[in-house]
Image (cartoon, rainbow, N blue to C red):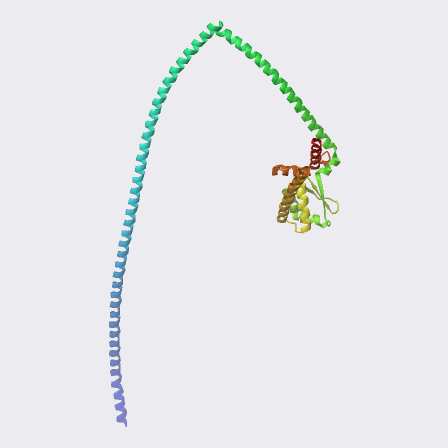
Length: 347
C-alpha cells in the first residue's frame, strides 16, 4: 500500500511540470497564432486603406480636373461674352461717331447757311433803312412838313383820341362802380335782414328727429362720442343732443345735407345697430335716396309745367330747388307757379 501511494505521488510530481510545460507551450502557440492573425489583419487593413486612399486620390484628382475644366469653360464663356460686349460697344461707338460726324457736318452746313442769311438780312436792313429815309424825304416833300412837325401833328391827334377813350372809360367805370355799390348794398341789406329774422333762420337751419326714448341718445353718441363724430363727419351737419325729451336736433345751413342726415339717423334708429360702419352704410343709402328724390321732383316739376326735352343735369338742379326757400316760400313751388303764370299770359 505505501508503494502505491509513493507511485501516485511520484506520478503527480512528474505530471505537474509536464502539464505546466504543455500549457505554456499551448499558450505560446495560441499567442503566436493570434499575433500572426493580427498581423495578417493589419496588413489587410493597411492594404485596404492604401487602396481606399488611392481610389479617393483618383476621385479627388478627377474632381479637380473636372472643376478645372468647368472653370476653364466658364472663363472661356465669360471671355467670349466680354469680347462680344466689347465688340457691340465698339460698333455703337463707331455708329455714334458716324452720327456725330453727320451732325457736325449738318451743323456746319446750317452755320454756313446762317452766315449767308445773316449777310442777306444785313443787306436787306441797309436797303430798308435807305428806303425808309427816302420815304421820309418824299413824305416831307409831298406834305410840306418836316419830320418834327409831322410828329407834333401825330401826337396832337393821338392825344385827342386818348382823351375821348379816357372819357368813355371813366364813364364805364362810374357805371360799373354804381352797379357794384348797389350789389353790395343789397348784400348788406339781405345780411341785416337775415340776422334780424332769428325765428325764420332757426326754422331754415335745423331739423328735429324724434326718438323712441331718451336711452337712444346715448347710443347715438356712442362710446367716447365716436358715433356722433362719425355722423357729423359723413354728413357735414351738427348734431345737438340736449335736454329736449325724445328728440335730436340737426343743425346746418345746407338743407340737402340736413335731409341726408335726417334720413340716415331715422334709418339707424329703426335698425337699432348704431356703429361707425353701419352709420357709413346708412349715410350712403340716404344720399342715394335724396338724389333719387331730387330727380323725381325735377321730373315732376317739368311735367307739371309742360316742358320736355330738358337736359338731365338741369332737371337735377331743378329738383334741388325743393330744398331751397326764398322769403319763406319753397323755391321749386314758386318757380312752378311763375312758369304757369307765364304760360297763361302767353296763351
